[in-house]
Length: 402
Length: 229
Ligand SMILES: Nc1ncnc2c1ncn2[C@@H]1O[C@H](COP(=O)(O)OP(=O)(O)O)[C@@H](O)[C@H]1O
Ligand SMILES: [Mg+2]
Image 1 (spheres, each protein chain N blue to C red):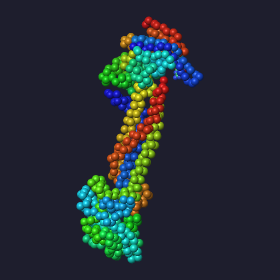
Image 2 (cartoon, rainbow over the protein chains, first blue to last red):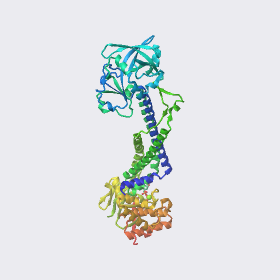
Image 3 (cartoon, chains in turn yellow, orange):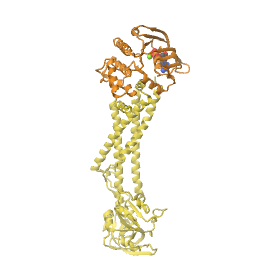
């Protein structure tokens, strides 16, 4: 047996010298580890669910636009004149779930009032396949495939300018050749986003109608909106302007990041608390054996050997614990994959509405592979911190022993 | 290679004013195959002298040598290695590891020395046989009597065939009959295998069988006697 193998064997034996104490240490570490993995998976699945919900309604995962479409200094300002065509977007095949859109700020006049809104022209067939915008119609209907000069308004907006389904509105904007663009549109539907800002600032029409209004050639459009959440942005698109949803919907980006970071912080706090308890137990365990360390040293075990054996002991314990912990975390995650958690239990049964969108309350938890090594790594890191003080004491004592 | 202490002083300084001589001008030579006992009342300095020989403590003055090697110039870890290589220890309270069986306790220093698996097995069996415990190798210390535990401790000390076996009051925890048996075991090992022993005791009845007896008083060797046994 090599020296190291014997060291491990020796440490393993020592580990179970007071079995109950060791089992409690392993239990607390593995429960902590399992809970953290589960919790991170939960937070990740929850925010993914939320993102999916948001992005599928209208925003999409990312927008591809002409490099100069958005103003460098203010991402919210955009340049109506900068258009692109499929030919300019070489890698269009790499974007699986995407649709073309045309955007323009316009004024819409109802019976009483004229207000500004962002008019989006969209490909009705494609849009219905990949976004859930059409589901938000609360009155009237969605844009007709073969229709022309139809418009859908947000519920609040329609109320403010006082128009109803079936009525006509006048639209005034600026065409891309700089001329004044104006046309009449028929309101065919009203959108209900649950009362958020979106209801006040958006209007939709057929792609072709928007292109006509803006005097754009038919093969030109402003952006391609991708709804593909799971694939990365194709690298070859880097000479286009790509806006991730985190920029397009900064509030949602911030809250998702908040949930993720907060969960990590809670995880670290759990590990610190468990480590403090562990450090104390290790201290007791090592103290009880001080006389033994002295006799081991007398019969020829160097201080470095004794220290190493204690470290291995703690690592063997940690390894058993994170292994069980990972299994527990995986089991709990899998359980809640089959039986999704209803997050309305956290709100007393009230629906969760964010940014004007109602979040689906059932969260199906999926495992995120990287947590299964990140969390054990974090636990190992804290185990090392936990060991330092008890070990220093052992080393110091051994120098002054006899 | 003999162990040699010459003009060794060991001063314990508990504080600035209080200084205690644990050893004072001690001169001891331990030739090979010696069988030597340190005898004296409690507090006379027996443990101090044994600890000095073992390199567990360093002398305040004087020299401490093994063969040509100066033990005082070694580092802490080097002295530990030196003990592993050349010495075996028997303790008053046995100091067996409770988590290891008798055989595994004997194995421990052999593993540290890096012996092969086969050699370890042979040496453990040999040592168990020498102390008369060949059948009890699989027992844990808690399953053995005091005398049996001390035999395991002796087996652990001799298994590496060290040049010197040190024992600090090896019989103090044992009844007189068992104590007598332990000393007889020492004598047998000394005769059969030329193992060198130095041990401390304050039991006068045991010392008739010992070749060299050093009487210790106030840290000094007050008298030495050599019996022809
Ligand atoms: N670590 C120490 N610090 C201070 N004094 C000590 C220490 N160890 C031993 N002494 C003193 O040295 C003297 C010899 O002690 P020791 O060698 O243990 O004697 P013995 O083993 O014969 O009982 C005693 O007076 C004891 O109090
Ligand atoms: Mg003593």
